[in-house]
Length: 441
Ligand code: PMP
Image (cartoon, rainbow, N blue to C red; front, side, top):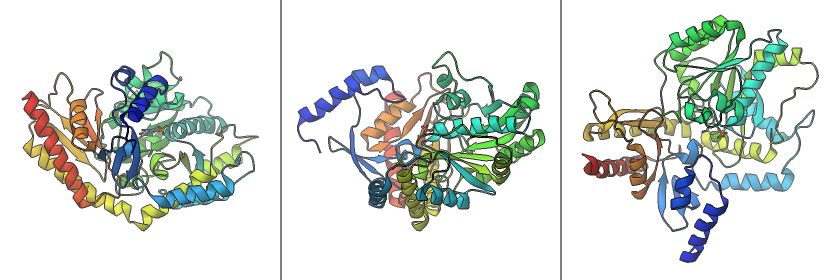
């Protein structure tokens, strides 16, 4: 811990002066400085330089699945770095951790998703899926199939393609020009998807992308039967189905990949975050056998897509150990059971607090909608979620607000969480809602 006040103040000053935070309200950063300067983590807990310990109810950015401070991952990273920190995987070069991780992911991915292209994160994975889909159709002699359809309220990242596919409009409006050939459909209606394909012209559509459960859009579960129908429609029109498992992968929802709940297999599946539990930067796209075989038989010359860090040896070694821990510690089963307890806790709070509307969770990803009127679902003029997040933090719990056309609290605690710790989260939320309701009602 940094003991002297001056030490902490120096960090705050340097932060404001030199550190442009990702996805931040820059005015607020300048006015208030960082709310927490985290220093260490253990399990579901984070501790800051002032010595405050809080529950990481978001697994930081939905990614620290196995929890903080797992020394086995640190050991593996050190060993691999000392042995071989980096090597190229371009052309015919390769390395053992990347090969073994690709094979491991093939063994746990649904159906015939068997060939992996590695990236450094979620945005790169989605951009890769879009480029591979578009290139695929060129190879297949259908070069007009270039459009990518995505859902409203979706979040796919901030690289240019990923931003362009993101259904949450404020991310696209951040600049005045995004990538061409992206279109959006209402994410809750299968009829809208069919209509959009017909309107655009099926022969111009390369792929449809969706998160099995939308995360940054407010933790939205799909309507009953949605993905079965998506699969059918994609097959009917010859469109590639891509799922974005960046949040929902690696045990988050109680199974390996979120799409497994819906009994269908996409043509491509993007992953990141939980693959390393955030201990190293890694993502990727898994292709099914048909796409892989077609790329092998139809490609001429070089596949001109690849990142310096595609198949990074240290990141892949960390991922292999992370997956081993998820399996060894039964974390998927824990996610399922603790997720049921979390949802039961949300329902208890819903019965007690006037401003709680819809609640939902599947495994350890959940959301609470804030409403003024439970009957009509009408919301408050000024959203309350940010205030609740601040109050929860004061009470020792980090969670996150979603305020795009809604007023929602979202949660995604580490998969190692215990029953007692879930109860602790519910107790803190109870106290938090009581305090905020006292102020406003
Ligand atoms: N897809 C989804 C569903 C995500 O939630 C995120 C990140 N929150 C991304 C893609 C982008 O990933 P990254 O920030 O690693 O680029």
